[in-house]
Amino acid sequence: IVLCSHKSSSIQKETPKKKPKLELKPSNGDSSSITQSMDSGGTDNFILISQLKEEVMSLKRVLQQKDQTILEKDRKLTELKADFQYQESNMRVKMNQMDKSHKESMEHQQGKNRELLKQVASLSKGKKFDRTGSSLLP
Image (cartoon, rainbow, N blue to C red; front, side, top):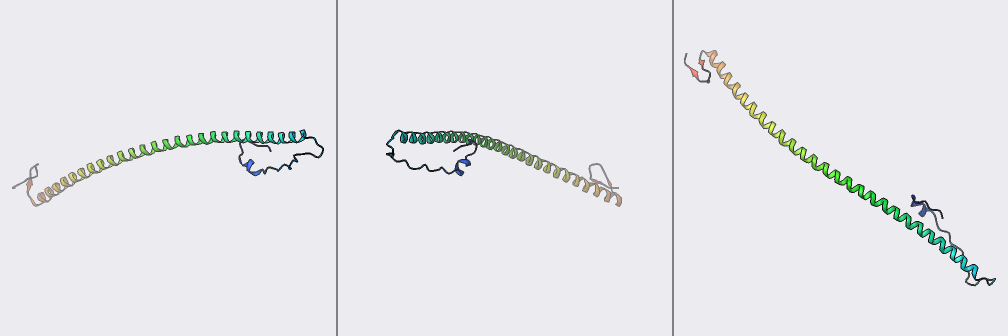
C-alpha cells in the first residue's frame, strides 16, 4: 500500500488485502520459508504503522497550528469588538452633548425671537421699547 502523507482519505479508500493463511508445517518440510514469509508480512505492517504514525503526527501539528491561528484571530476579533464598542460609546456621548447644546441654542434663539416679535408688535401699536425689552410710555 502506498500512502501519501498529505491525504488521509487515501488510507480509508484502500482496503488491505488479506494474505493467505500460512501453514505452520510446509508440505516440503522447509520451515525457513514460513519464517521469511511471516517476517516480510511483519515488516510490511511495521512500515505501514510507521507511516501512519508519521501522518498522525503531521496532522496533529497541522491541527495545532490551525488551533493557534484560530485563537489569534479570536483575540484580534475580541480586541476589535472592544474598540468598536468604546468608539461607539464615545460617539453616543458626543452626539448627546451636541444634541443638548443644539436644543439649548434653539431655545435661546426662540426666546430671542419671541422677544423681538413682542417688540415689533408693540412698536407697530406705537409703544417704545428700550434695549432691555421693557416698554416705555410714549
